[in-house]
Image 1 (cartoon, rainbow, N blue to C red):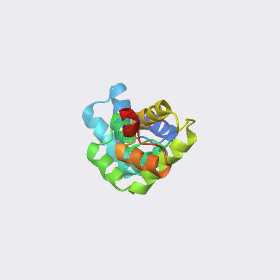
Image 2: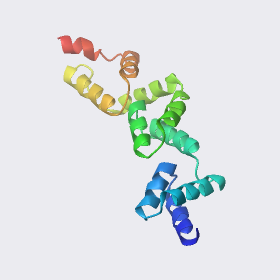
Image 3: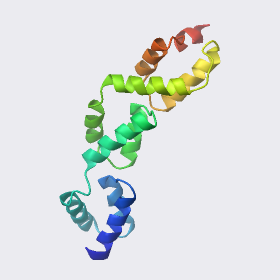
Length: 155
């Protein structure tokens, strides 16, 4: 394992990585699939690689630090090579009120006039693009006394 293992350690020292990222890293260096599995097992045995912990930490950082919604976080984790079932399991552990709180905080940071319908529609589009679910957005709007975009669209 030698030099390549040291290279992997350097790679995962930069930031936490998923096993999918490490597999891709090794594949790009021409490592054979059987050998890739051996490296992954060794890293897991050495407690240097743990997809469950990686997933949990990434979710909380994106949720509380960046105020991303569930769908955007899920997409990012899939792109980082985390298994869909693990992502769903970790997302399900997050209480609904944390998703709600994150969305509400993000709305408060945004500059918009709640009397201007186009501002509200733009805000809703940004929230949807940020991965927030429709029901979370509607609840946040109601809590902050922002007129419903559905009502605005009918005007």
